[in-house]
Length: 260
Ligand code: ADP
Image 1 (cartoon, rainbow, N blue to C red):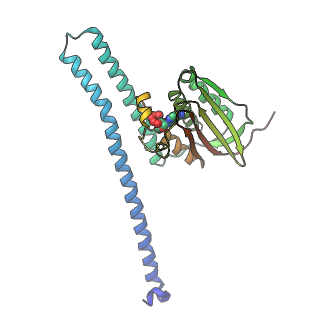
Image 2 (image 1 turned 90 degrees about the vertical axis):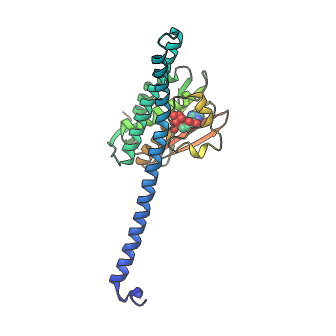
Image 3 (image 1 turned 60 degrees about the vertical axis):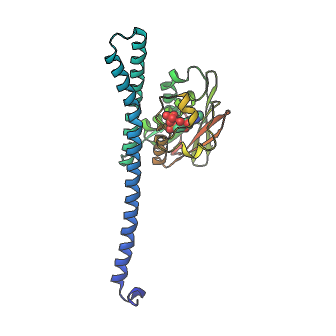
């Protein structure tokens, strides 16, 4: 006992080390459990499109004299499921890179440039909506250009997927101290209150969105979250079922854009 009271600092040092080790071990166990869960969920998600592809190909093989129309339908199903499979693999790789601690390629650029780029990249998706980008005072940020573009594309893609034709999508920037807030709002179907805390979890998809867009992966928002957090920012959500949603990115500002 007296050793613990400081007479023998070596023993105390060892005890502290053991506590650290225990903590590290627990942390490692948590990481490996999370990875295990990810692998299980991934296998589960991959199985559905694979089964559909196999089933349809089997059908075509077995019934060589099947009606042309039915064959077309089965092939269209194969194509759709293959697209979903490739999207899943792509998104999983993006997340695996995040887990592996892949470093971002940081550079200085204006938020306006990346926003314009993301809007252009999604014109095909948002063409049936009223898209409005409000005027804003541009700022310079330090970030990974491609990754931030990816985040904005995910948000615009979601806004268009979950908003009926003719609905509104609005991008609005707000300055808050040393941060810039980027709000992407829509007048779409909204997210049920019980789903809201879960939409940033990997593979989680709201029930309504599964019906609306069976091709989704449930990985868009988790990808957006890790990218934004890697930039020292955060992502938040406000939504009302049947009214619409706003996803907000909070990012640190590097400096003002010099006016010419
Ligand atoms: P996905 O869109 O492929 O399902 P995400 O991770 O991007 O995956 O989104 C997770 C879930 O969050 C969606 O399935 C949907 O339920 C909900 N969601 C995300 N963005 C919106 C939005 N703008 N409007 C309504 N629901 C949304």
